[in-house]
Image 1: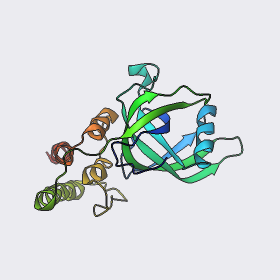
Image 2: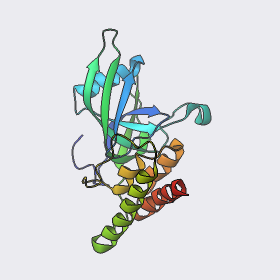
Image 3: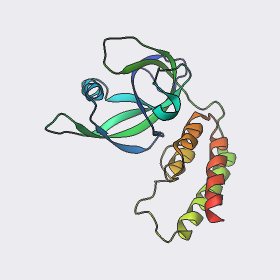
Image 4: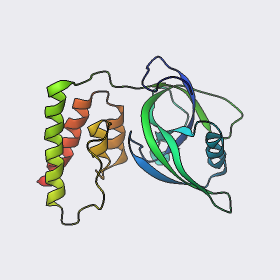
Length: 204
């Protein structure tokens, strides 16, 4: 994969891993890789750039995965990796940037592959507007944490160089379809509004 993952004109080939969960940019996700075709995918990724695309897919609801054009996912980069004696792998991936499937690729690979393009935000908040919006969401998040009797051991680094909406969304335990809709939005203000809505509901 060459070029910036934020360049919407870039088109690149990406292994695809459909799962009934959503990877968000900046999120660390542990995965247990046991199916042979995805063991092969992990091996191939480790020999190249360590990256594949995680796509939300609920087989019970949506049926077979067909690499449908237009689907939005997140590039995951393999960090920690452990191969077990029986060939299974335990890996931890970090969500990088979002992508959109432009077309499925037929190949000899046992796993899915797609031709994808990056999906950066199309509306960008800057300056005081962004700072004010972030302060509001961070204050709301801290109010929620303070209200919990069982507080989480680890909290996201809200000063990280990453969209705040995705950092806060990692802490929200809701239906993965909600996270998928958030992932698809290309406006940080709209994403923060959705996150704030859930946080306010917790405080009620």
